[in-house]
Image (cartoon, rainbow, N blue to C red):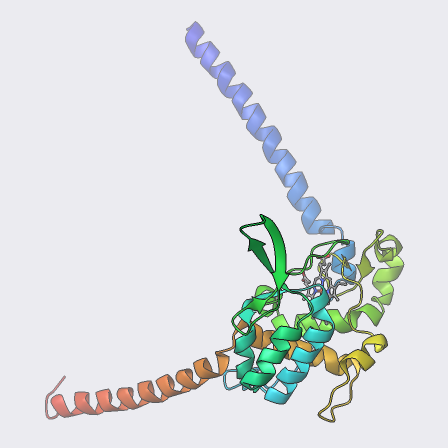
Length: 280
Ligand code: HEC
């Protein structure tokens, strides 16, 4: 008798707990449905990348070698001070149309040298780059760590369009309504810079492309050297570094599709032939 009483009490206590939890859950869900989650500063101010039309876009895209060479020049003169390209070697520049002598010279003159360990003295020294070397690592002693850029267009949503937007985004105004709602979010912490295309709105990289770089980069193929053009070209170049063989992949893809279509037609013809005159 007592055990039945005890069991009933336990059951009721349990039921009470479950009931309280259900009421709390209902409160949360109905609150969410009525009011939604409050908007954050990132939601109000962060923007998706702008559109960027590159010749390499789309399944039939091709690289524009002149643009890639300009993009390489932007990387060489501006970005390489802080960013490495540690998955790309100098000799791969042949893919952009540079000849052996040019590549040797680019490697030799590269300002960041390759570290070498002197076994006898037990110390580190450095030597000039050779075509077989990768673009060297950079030791950067300021705010933040510049990531290696070899694969950056694969590592970020909207790859090249994102890099391009980030480059030109420093001078763009934040959304006016969002700015009114979250004035605090516009103030960059010490050493960071506002950019509405960066996920958390403030990044450690100062605007790398400004009018000040125009004279350093100075295109020689007649293309006007503007910040927007440099941003497009360096983004195109970083699509190439992430997948230098993209064009071959596209060509193979088309060949495989043509083969599959042909094989399907052949297969269908064979099927019609084998089952000719049969009721099925
Ligand atoms: C003065 C040094 C410096 C120069 C020059 C520089 N960067 Fe950066 N870059 C940084 C630092 C530091 C970061 C890390 C920022 C962070 O995570 O807050 C960064 C980050 C980036 C990122 C990654 C952003 C992300 O989504 O994480 C990209 C892309 C980039 N830089 C591209 C470039 C390009 C292209 C150039 C040349 C036009 C360039 N950078 C020149 C210092 C530099």
